[in-house]
Image (cartoon, rainbow, N blue to C red; front, side, top):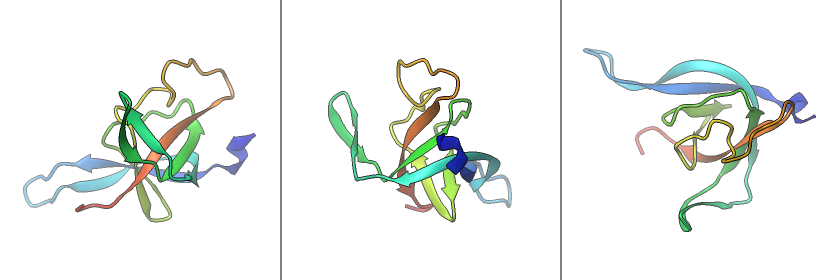
Length: 112
C-alpha cells in the first residue's frame, strides 16, 4: 500500500495584505502524502503544451486543494499544475475506496 510511505506535508494559502501586515503565503493545514520527482513530463491543455511537471503528489482522494494553494515539503514549495484543481486529481474517473489521487506539481518560489 502506497500510503505507508506518506510523509507530513504542508498546505500554504495566500493571505492578502492588511494595513501594516504584508501579503504572502501562510500555514493552512498539514496532510499526509508522498512527493516523487518527475521524469520531466509535460501537461497539456487542449493539445497545447502548458508547463513542465517537476514532481508528482500522491495522497488520499479525500484531500481537497484550492487553485492558489502551495504544497511544501522540506522547504521546497510546489504549485499544482493544470489548475483548476480536479476534486479527485483525475478527470472523469470516480475513485474507489483505498485508491489514491495523483497531482502534477511544479516548483515555485515567492517573488518570481
